[in-house]
Length: 68
Image 1 (cartoon, one colour):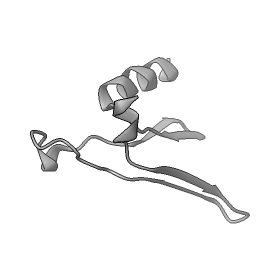
Image 2 (cartoon, rainbow, N blue to C red; image 1 turned 120 degrees about the vertical axis):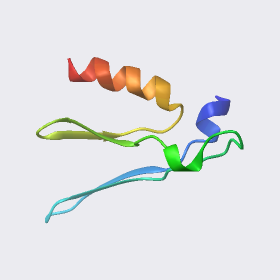
Image 3 (tube, one colour; image 1 turned 180 degrees about the horizontal axis):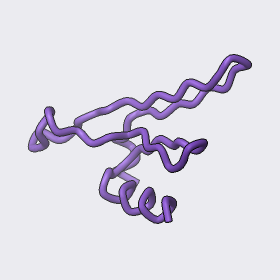
């Protein structure tokens, strides 16, 4: 639960003209390199996109599983 409390915000808005997807990249650990922040928005297929919050390594496992 501590990891998710430090996670950035993810947001998706659906309108009649399209979809807006946004994700905040937040570095809360002093030892992490600011220039190598991981992606937070993933395209799973031609018509499916998702955003992730929390630990990026966990998200990568889930994203790879969803792409299969």
